[in-house]
Image 1 (spheres, rainbow, N blue to C red):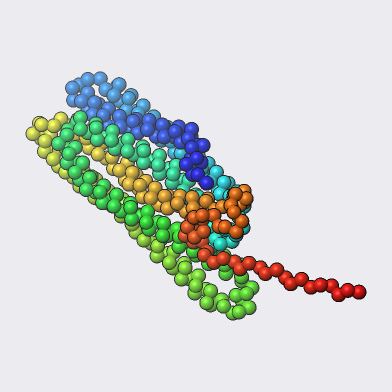
Image 2: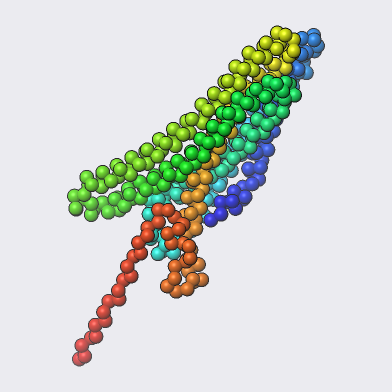
Length: 353
């Protein structure tokens, strides 16, 4: 199973949604600039009809393009999830029975249902959001440099420190998310095993023992999920500290420079608006990075399941040999035991009459 090929089949929707997102980002970047020109026109007692008209047009364009971007990317994500589940389900149904019997079926269910959802939606939505946020941040920095580069250097310094910490956190989020997905799969396998043998469990009066085992697996999944939530919760505050610090410095230093006449009030207003506009894209950028790290863990698990040998490959292998590199290497939750071969029943000669 090739997820890249699955994504490529929906590139038209993805490109359309991404184009609308980029156009919406451009319309949003134009708003503070036009607001600065409106303040200049008021200060110089010039007509303000055209600046106001352009500002309204940019606001409406931003709203329409943002809605189209969200719909196109969301639809592409659902299509990717559908195709991944369809292909993966077909490969499981056509898989070689000896290989399929070694898998923990609860983990297979988790990979096919929840991991495909996470992988597809994160690939489409988080990647598109990251690209739009990068353009928004880069464009805002360029326009802020044209307004006042000393204020920009101060802003970049504050945000750079926060961004470095957020990147380190994003790497830890991916590691923790992979471990969480594996432990959720282990709980699903344990639950399916018990329910499949419920009659035996009741006959042997092992309800308490199996309940404790399920509780242990559920607790492992809970603790790993709490770690993912804890690391993810630090991403937004890490960026908020940087943006709040930069905002405080820009406003205080900028107002002092406006008072001395070294910085026009219109430029300071536009600069502060750009800084406000950068807060959301920066937060979304690092949230997207965190989501992509979690999505990579899901993609890895889906890809591993998609490599299960198929029935049509069986004829290409030598009789009695296992496919090289398949057993014990592709799925971390794969059972290592081989089922004992059934011995042929002894032949009994019929008595002669």
